[in-house]
Image (cartoon, rainbow, N blue to C red; front, side, top):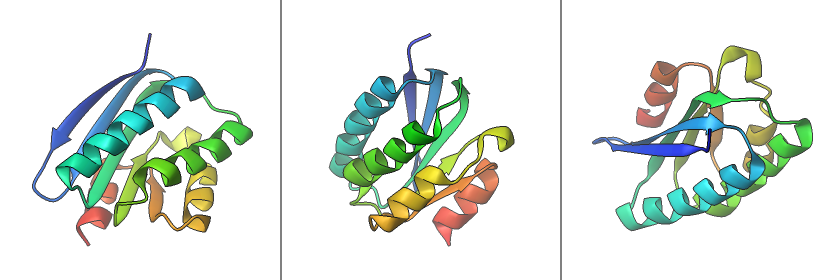
Length: 118
């Protein structure tokens, strides 16, 4: 299934719910679109929920995902990503942090939201 994004604008942050098959092409396209929309909304914090994305990315793709996050979300104060527990590697987090983007990866939307609000 092609990747889809649902956007929910909340008072403290915006949430992006991604669904569909994992692919680097889809992630890159959706990140570019979401980054521009986030700039237009003047978002300071963003939560990206990836728990409904099917498939797994290789290490090199996770590395690239961190670079994509840095390229499109560098304007944010905080960026939280939520993944299923069996998919957490923190590779994208380390790459984005090394590029100056405050990305943290979580396995719980509740914990991610609490960090964004802190």
